[in-house]
Length: 189
Image (cartoon, rainbow, N blue to C red):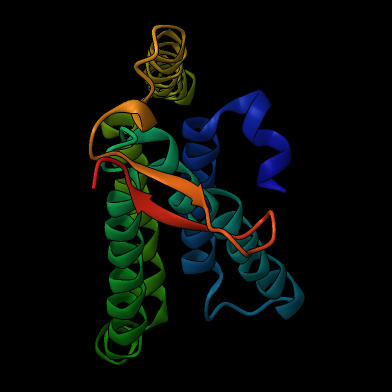
């Protein structure tokens, strides 16, 4: 569902919407828990927490690092971000039963609401607008690609292609093999 809104709203707004709805829904759960009433309402609100968790923070956890970090460190930082997310899930799921036993469900749901508000504040302070980040890094990568491509084209025109340099690796046809079978050779040796 968040993929449908990612282009129109942007990643930062999707994440902010997810965190704000989680804060609201966990606060509602804190108010409703233990009160007499229709359990279907409690089930609906609890189900909405899963929806907005996956709509906002869960989806953007995988998309934001790919569009925020420069190409040189993008894959490494994506791994670091994924590891931090998994660590947070481990700590949260391990601490939840302990916190419920110590404080009760109502207090834990209000604590979850507060944590979601902290996530919203962190998103507002530290996550760049997705349009600016994507444009900046895509432009940077596009510029590097164009420089490399133009340099190669100019080198070919001047006879300075990478295969023409001494010591450059090139594919050479091996006698007695079929046309598509080549071996990698070192030119100049």
